[in-house]
Length: 295
Image (cartoon, one colour):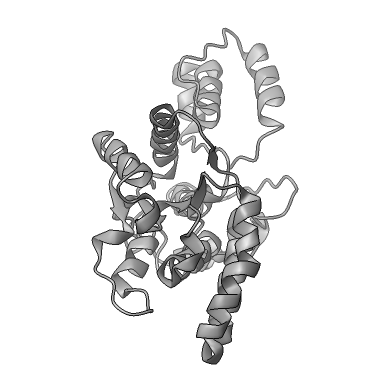
């Protein structure tokens, strides 16, 4: 996985919690409309791609910006999703943001299977290739994006109970958004980007191994600021994440057990977890976190 570009900002601007990409004629007035309403009622700031009037075959710059400024992108794959060039351009942009800024991407397979999405590579793309003979690279990007998105972990609805299905999505997204909320970082920290670049190289996010990187230095030189910026950059790429600040002081004042409970609560989502003692906490952390990809 490529290291995200951090030259522009240590904390990318996020104006929306969720960006919804969907084929309007398939689900606007049914599933996606109900999902959008449920997200909004929950207080989740959601941008629908039909909020912007589209003309022609080119995607609106407003939509591209909305994707960049969202914490999570949700793709509602339906039978005719891949027939829309706008949807496919959105999909390419969404997956670009997944790679470049660590945006969380979750597909919803609505009355289709991932295999159905992959089949559209042959059936629908033949039509697009004929239409866009002079821009074949664009079609190739669509093919790659469809194949990648179909392999992502997501939700599947096939003849299920739609209200319960939507509720489960909303609850999970609500939990995910909390984990995607950025930590506050100094606005103009001197030399921050070079430190983030160095940390990114050391962390090598994307490889299937365990990395531990220490930030050493005297007090007040910006170690916590660097850690926050790196956390903001990569948190969206992990199944679970936790940021524990002032570990020494917290341990002295509240004990190690509380710190262990905070770590497990943030990574596992169990807010009522009680360990009782440090030894149990050590074992629970070993057993529960060894099977998760967390940051």
